[in-house]
Length: 439
Picture 1: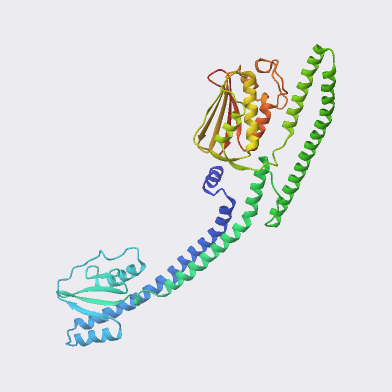
Picture 2 (picture 1 turned 180 degrees about the horizontal axis):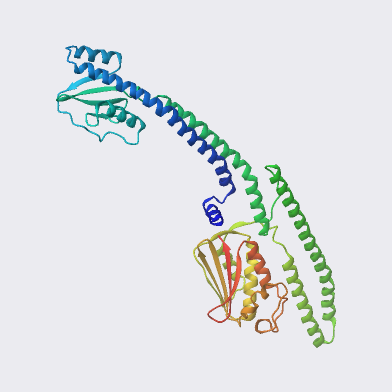
């Protein structure tokens, strides 16, 4: 049972920290106001209302008793009441008809007035109206063949402190809630800033100088994140610099080997060695491409249609067919996505003859399909081919150059954008690469 209630509270409670904190602050304020309001109305307003109503009905009863004596001074008595008690009294000769439609059952004022009139004049010999007139209350009391109509100010039975109390109980509460909102906004802003910076850094984006702010605990977490970010950035830069140095050192002897092969008289041997050197250069380029980081590239809003057309246009190959959706603009690192698509197209052209690229918008994601008509990849190898340097020795891997980094690089780029890559078989029994990017 406890687990069920806990799950229910988790579903009902807001998910964001700001709204949870606001609820913690606002709920006690509202609860306190409700309790104070209930106590006030029960102990003060309702009791005061009952006392005022009882006093007024006693005055009306006195008037009715004097008026009923037929002493001949009825007009004088009415004039005195009108003058001294803020009453307006008149006699209506029409037959008395009780009208209870104007009585409000939910109003404390109407309820008190009904109770006092009923106990004094009986349940069928009176009616009253507190709604028709803004500041006046009308009472009709059965008298012989007609009725006495009495008008008096509503303030005679309604304490004026109710409005003042409502103002003073509402205004401070709203003021406290506004202060809480401003305070909590300032307190949660550093957390949101830290979360966004961590998300961007996790996606491989370049994060500029990050300045910790907020409460001491939040500053500590932000400070540790910033130190971790700097350590990782230094490590990646050192790796890139090391591989760049290796590249420079390896290219120099490879260039000398090429010159020596050009002077070699045994052309058959020279051609075989030249093929090996070219393969070494291709492998070296792939290693460098894999190690190249995308952190220095800024994210920008890019038209995917134009980007795909630009990548395909470089191949000048009529066997690459593209199917584009309406103009789709999303925030990406364009050079990284170009490298991803280039790797997939090169991979498809290495093992097939025809390639089809399809772009679609599905809900909150942009989907890119890259299909080829090659031999495909066995389903059990889908996860393995995403690993760096992994090559299968069958269908797609036989007698092909490369070191098995094409799909791995593409997968790394897409994941750094918050998306994912799936491998499937298409209708041509070839490989379908499905790229999903958040829009």
